[in-house]
Structure formats: C-alpha cells, structure tokens
Length: 255
Length: 68
Image 1 (tube, one colour):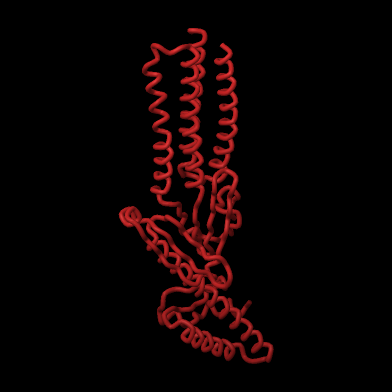
Image 2 (tube, chains in turn yellow, purple):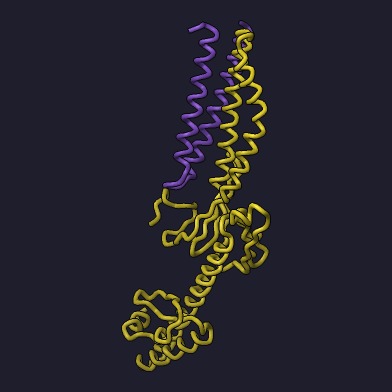
C-alpha cells in the first residue's frame, strides 16, 4: 500500500510504478532568475551608490535608503521564490498506467491532469532553437484518442529519450490489456465447455490450441504465458512461452 | 523624525506582507516537494537570507536613529 506521503500524485495506485518524474529544464528557471536580477540591477546600483556616498546624507535619507534597499532585496527573494515554485513544482510523471501533468502556476493555481496509457495515439519530440539544441531540451507532444486535449511536455530535458520511453510503456500497456482480454476469454471458454460435461483433459488441450492460435494471430512478435498467480504477463517472444506449462494450467482451470 | 516613523511603519507593513507570502511559499514547497529533492535546501536558504536581511535592516535603522 502506498502511504499518503509517499504518493507523487493523489490518484496513484498502490501497484503503480513510476518510470519518470520530469521537471522543466534548468534553463527555464535560470532565464527567469536572470531576467529578475537584471531588471532590478539599475535600482540596486543607484542605492549602493548613495550608500557609498553617505557622508553628506541626512539621518532621514539614510533610513530611507536602508529601507528601500531591504525592500528591494526581499522583493527579489520573493520573486525568485515565486519562480522556483512555478518551475520546480511543475512536474510530469510517467507511470506504467498513465501520464500525469502537475501544473503549478504561482502560489494559488495548481492543476493535475492525467492521461491513461491506452488513450495515447502518437508521441513526437521537438527540439527547436539554439539553446534547446545545445542544451538538449525541447517539447514532447502526446496525441490522444478521442476529443481529449493533447498532452504537451514543454521544455523538458532529453525529449527524444522521454518520447521513446512513453511509446515503450504505451505498447506494454496495450499488450497487457490485450493479454487480459485473452485470459478472460479463455476462462469463459473453459467454463462453458466443462459445464457441458466434457472431459477435463480434452478441454485443456482445446484451450491450449486456442491460446496458441490467438497469440500468434494477435502478436507474432511477442509471447503470451500465464503465471501461477493467474495474472497474465507479456514478455519478449520466445517459442516456448507460447505453450502453457503443466502446473500453470491447473491454476487457470481452478478459477 | 516624522518621516523616519513613516518609513519604519511602511517597512513594518512590508515585512508583515513578506512574511505571510513566505509562509505560503514555504508551505507549498513542504507540501508538494518530494523526499530528497531541492525544496528543503531552498526553504533553508530563503529563510536564512530573509532573516539576515531583516535583522540587518532593523539594526541599521536603530543605529541611525539612536546611534547605538
């Protein structure tokens, strides 16, 4: 069971595996931080010049300069904190089941949107611009099925690697779903045949053929086998895995 | 003297606003940060710098006004 504190997002399932936690590229924040510093630089320069030439200044002017300097420094800190929160708490999470976009816009706006792996239709990566090319960051576009809004991971590091990983996870999720459907169909087939009073061995042999044929027709490149726990798993193709093993059949037939 | 009092009042109001803002910001970092990430060091650095700036300002004002 995933503890509440360990969850990366509210709807995270206990068995859900986190594959990627992606933040925007650091360049995103550095650009913001530099703009903030550069904007305030002339004001700082003026204040420091006056303080350096304080000999002729009155008491009230000195207090004024001190207060203004302090307010400027604290304001800069506040702006940097705002930028950091918006940058650092804005994350994309890729799990084996879904994509999660946690969008933090300042202090009082936080959106969380999710996309199931099976809803993904197309994934593409885009790197455009001088800094993006040099520093290896860009956008990943995820097209969705139906009328759902497309997902865009903006300014993330290594977009090509991320898009490849999302495609791999999408294929895994798709295969797993297909596998589950086959498993349910097989179970229903066996139950219906046993209800007819047929011999258990005949039913098992027929079921073996059915699974073998289905698997070959659906995915030639990948193998289908059933674990002892009764759950189905997809792994890379191996001719032996197409055949149901003796001990594993019992569990299926016992369900 | 009246101008100095006015400046001190303005600064006090600013500091109160700043503290409320900082509390909200730090709450976000604590609440939504993950174990082992940069949120805790940032909270620490932000708090230390802010505290130092405010303390130095207050001491400078006291020095300018009372000469101590």
